[in-house]
Length: 432
Ligand SMILES: [Fe+2]
Ligand SMILES: [Fe+2]
Ligand SMILES: [Fe+2]
Image 1 (spheres, protein in one colour):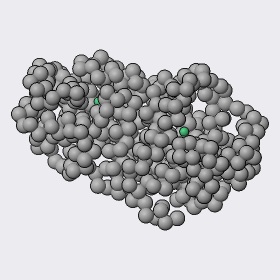
Image 2 (tube, protein in one colour):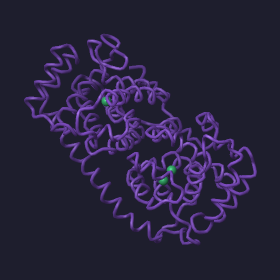
Image 3 (cartoon, helix red, strand yellow):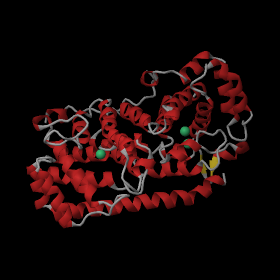
Image 4 (cartoon, protein in one colour):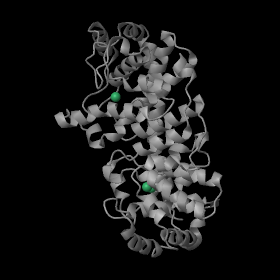
């Protein structure tokens, strides 16, 4: 497959796009992560940090609130003085800490709300806090104070005043001085409120130019699958399940090892558009009404558009984002059919149905083997899903189900550990 051998995905473009999706769920916080990244980098540069250090700070800033899952918690972060901001920072750290790509970055995310507290905030226990954590803390609060619907230069006075009054208590006074200097330069404010934030980001020398190998791509996709899934207890293990099932069916269908791994990556990302769907809809215990159903349906359109903007992910996007299309053209949102539906997309559609009907949902329990087999065979007979792939899935049902069960059990443990471990360590952070 030519498309695969030409696959070159840049870390910078992946991060910028994924960073934006973190703010999808609340339009009032639109582009919060990217704006914090720009403000933090302006401060870090003026503070005289090396390009390498600034790059770590930039990456941490693009992902700093990945530990926030619900709209309610997100809205709470829009208040200026925060009550217990440590839990989401700890969760973010917990999600990132095992990934080699984020070794330097995870501790910055962990401490991005640490108070300066007259210098005590230099350390967390024995650990010296990365200056980037204090920089992101400051940049984050500046971004929250900045009203996007009002003229920007007029806001300088009140924002500087609010920040200066918190020097030493909340913020490192040296950084506050740097900010005061920057605030005299108009470009800083125009940067912070610039509409074409993507363009502004891409021109920065801190955007990582690194090309990702398959291991690294899989790491980031897995990290994001947690962010997508952990928003609701009902979807907490869905992407892990479909990723494994799709990869296994691909193997049974004759895909190469590399293709199977790309299928697993596509599985991790297939519902990335759900980040645009409010948790209340994801978790509604009854049937969705028409409006809610329309919002839910839009998730797949968002998946397609999000992945489309990342160069090199074209094949993965096709496999991931056509999982609600049907062979007979009755799927959505593009109503593809026949030859326009690649085999990888057909596999993903079967894997999605198979995984979804076996899981518990807010409105029903997971189905047993007989019922699940009846449903998928029927979808094959109606030419809704690919008959050949259904046959493979039915012939190997026990094998696939066992794999799914195993991987989802482990993902469920991660989900529970995230909740308990991150809450336990929260008290440590508060003591700093
Ligand atoms: Fe935060
Ligand atoms: Fe934030
Ligand atoms: Fe979906």
